[in-house]
Image (cartoon, rainbow, N blue to C red; front, side, top):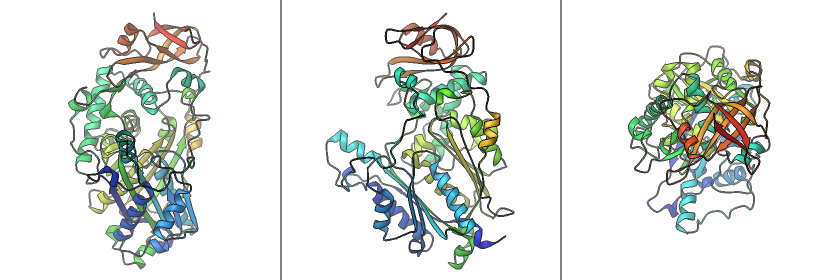
Length: 491
C-alpha cells in the first residue's frame, strides 16, 4: 500500500456552546472557526496553513452571503477549494468520503470538513426579543432547500410536510411489516432510544445528559408530549442546539511526516451511497428502503462500533434489519439526535469526531458511520478503522444500480382518488397541548393506486391510535371532502 494515498483522519475538534447568557453565544461561522482551531491543536498544530480543501456543512441558523469564504477569512486561509454544501443529514459523511477520495487520488493533501449551528441562540433571541450581535444577516439563504420534486402537491394540500409528520408513516409500515402491535412498536422505539440517551450521558459535548429510560421516553407528561403518532417529543430530533465540529483529513504519509502517533490516526476504508426517489409518495414501500439496504450491504462486516442515524426510531430499526440485532444493541458512539443534539444537517460531523475518539480510546478496531437525509431518501455510509484496510481506501461506492434493481413497482399516485382502499401507512398529528389534530393515511386502492388521505373524525382517529391492534391493512373508503381532498373513513 502507498502511504501517500492512504487517507486518515488526523485531527478533530468539537464545541457545545451553551453560555449562561445565550446572548453571548457564538454565531455559526465563529463556531466553525473555533472547532477548526481546536482540530488543528488536536493534530499538533500547523495543519490550518496547509489546508487546500474545505467543505462546510449546510447550516440553517444564520444566513451568510458566502459561508465558506467567511470561514476561510476568519481562519486566515486561502484553500484552492472551499465549498458550502447542500441540505442533507448524510452530507457530512459524503464530504468525509469525498475528501478521502481526493487524498487517495492526490488531488488534495489536507482537507477540512466543518459544521456549526446556533439554532438555540436564534430561537431564544426571537422568543425573548433581543438582538444577536452577529454578522449582518444576508437577505437570501445560500444553497436554499428546493422543495421541487420533494414535496408533492398532494402532501402540501393535506398538510403533511415536515419530517416529524412523514417519518411516522414509515414507522407504522415498518411496525406492521414486523407483526408488531402499535404498543409493541412504541416500546421498541423507547428501548432503542434509551440506548442512545445512555451514550449521550457519557459524551461531554452532548446537549442533554439526563439519560431518560424507556418508560420516560414513551410516557407523555413532564414536557414530553405526542408530536406525531407514534412518536413522543423525546423520540424526535432536537435542533435547538449550539454545536460545531471539525475534522482534518490527510494522508498517512503526511501524518507520519508531522510526527503524529499512529494510534491517534483513524483510517478511512470505504464508503457507499444510494438514494430513493425524492418524492416520498412515490416509493415502492414504506416498510424498508432499498437504497439504505444497498448502502449498508455494500459495507456489511463485523464492526466493533456503530453510528446509526437517529432522527427518528424507524431509521435505525430499518438499518437493524440489514446489520442485525448486534448493531442495535449499541447503535451509537455519539448519543443520537434527540439527546446529543440535532444541529440540523450537522449531526454526522459530530458522529465522526465521536467515532475517532472511541477508536483512539481503544473501544474497538473498526467503526461504521451511517447517515441519511431528506425523507429516508439519501443514504451514505463510511467504514473506518484504527488500521489501514487491505488494498487501501476504496474511492468508489455508488451502489445506486443495486438499489434500483431491488426496488419494487411504485403504485400510481392519485390526487383525486375515491372508492374502496386499505391503509398502507398512517399517523396522527398533535398540537402543542397534546390534542390530536388530524390523521394522515397513505391508502391503497383495490386496483393498486395510492393516495394520501386525511381525517378529522374523533372516532376514526381513536382507531388509528389503538395500541392493541395495527390499522395498517384495515379497509376503508376514500371520498373527497369540501376542499376536494381525499378523506378516509373506516368501513
